[in-house]
Image (cartoon, rainbow, N blue to C red; front, side, top):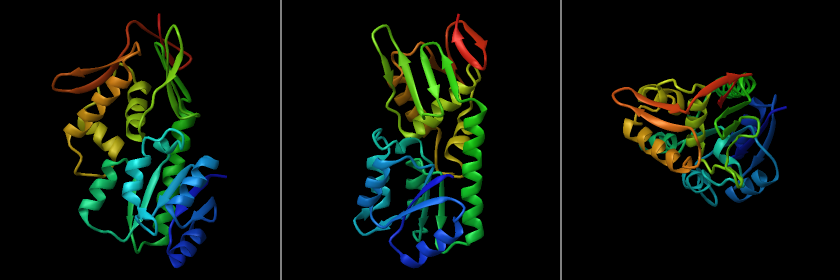
Length: 242
């Protein structure tokens, strides 16, 4: 059964959400402190987060914990449930890598449908191709990590959730050129305030973290980006150098 962490201090809303998502194993906490404790104890398949909590702001929490590898928060789908309807709040949340932003009050059927769809898509993506290797870089979807092997060691890349999504997209289709518009739509979804510059910034960060990888992210002028590795052979769904 899928595990969901729900962070919400409003008891009435919490009762409704627990009833709506009873098909899942839902852990409900009311503070960010308790959320961090829960995250350190087990893996969750999805996180539902309210923004206004007794011990802090949910958006700031996301900003601080987004790249915390010990919590493995960077790759877990994040849904915001909030009464904050301002566009600025939504833009900031999507820029931090939130997968969905649902305004309160919301319809139970819609929440259930959105959660079901996200977890179903996650299953399909994981089952499609669990391990991809290009040169000395390996993407392990089951373990949600990317490693680079050198002569002296195997190093795990410390990626944010958005960097992981971008690199996964590139590694699954090496040599394919991805337009910035396509990357924005597939990675950031319906957020209309993400610009080409946002993509460029994340690609620049990825390039630095991939400095020891044989595969390189190339800029295709006027078109977008692609992952390039010297002399690629394809065997058993993997891409490895010959």
